[in-house]
Image 1 (tube, rainbow, N blue to C red):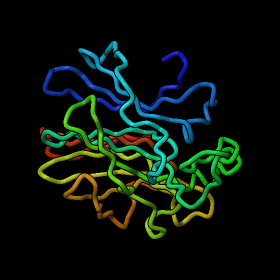
Image 2: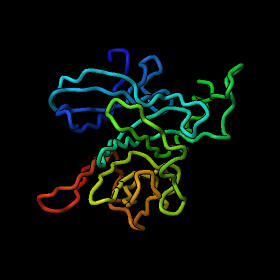
Image 3: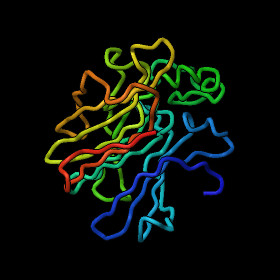
Length: 232
């Protein structure tokens, strides 16, 4: 993808023996800052984890007019549960916030508005999920965010999900801004649900808040019968 920035690959091996991957990409012409406003989620396939991966198609478009997630789709995290593929992602819930582009119906924010209101856009980030029965899709988006900041456990953002499915339960780690800090300070929270689309019940205490972290990955090791996570 020479004309795109690429970011945040998430992959799994499917029943066909191939490795299927999803990743964020956005046009270089939108600048690196376009990850928040011009991103989409692409799909690629390889014979092994080392690649090479070949682009197939876009599975979640960044422009979803009329949806809660109308502007951008970023940071995919795949979770396979039985014969279903759940693709978590982040987007910006700007309903009721933006001025529409001139002459555009239905309404959609202009690039100028997105640039001017970048901090507002940043603080409207939520987690969504889309589900499919095959790696290439089609994916059906859940109509509402799966996780939003509740202004009790965290504020401003709910982003960068990592999800694992084990014994009928979905375990999620996500990043939010700490309630204890006036300025943005990212913490990691963990919760569970019996459904991919939630609701998730999150623990009161963050799993880590000593310093700022992001981009967690999560897995269940059947050898030691424990969940593990790594973040930076």
